[in-house]
Length: 41
Image (tube, rainbow, N blue to C red; front, top):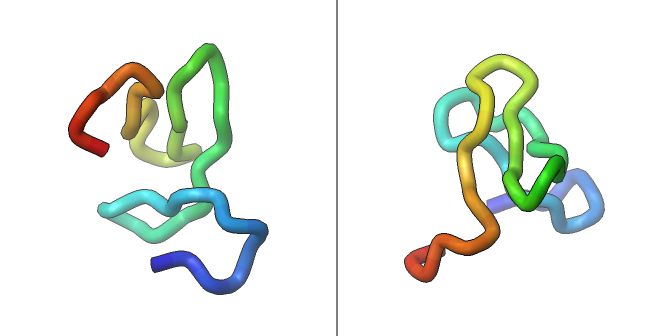
C-alpha cells in the first residue's frame, strides 16, 4: 500500500500520506480518514 514513506497509511482517495492527530489519521485534503479506535482497520 505505502512504499515511499516510513510506513504511515495513505489516503484511499488521493494517496497522500496521512498524519496522526488526536488518535485519528488525517488527510491534508480530505480530513480525518481513520480513527485509532476503529476495530475494522
